[in-house]
Image 1 (cartoon, helix red, strand yellow):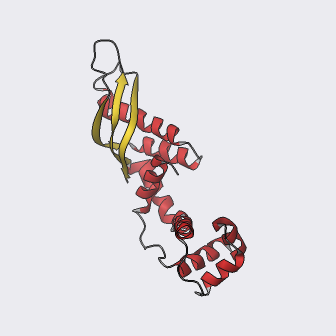
Image 2: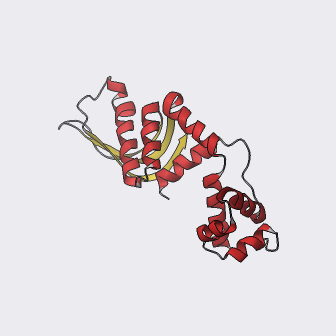
Image 3: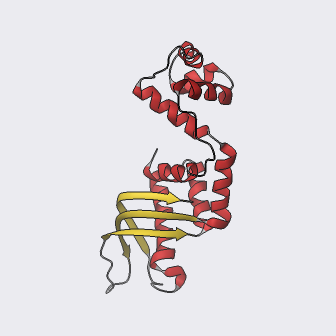
Length: 185
């Protein structure tokens, strides 16, 4: 997953009301319930069906690191879907989303203005419509580049142009060399 996709996912996961299962056996049992069978879980995790059954019965307790990571990722992806949906809905309709980033930013503007790229640390509350666009693009499987473009447009309007109160002739914001990126709902 991309930096933007992971950042959006992490923000949504902060809304969880209960912790996800921790042990490999509990995670496997959860996935078997969610996916309605051991065969589907085995295919998703790229292990044998027998291996899944042994985890479910706690005959194996400690997965290899690569399997542990896949298991954790699959459980997190499916954990508390209604709460995840409500958090996204709230961000997209009323609350908006906060982006906290340290990246190189510059912009295309008329000659004579200081459009030099420089590293800036910004924490900006984006309006709900941008949260909606980010989540919709993520749902549609957008690449990191597209999510980055949406974030750049949002920063252009909200931060650089202050909602239309300044820098009206600003054409495009460049958003590159991202050192840190975090979203908060």
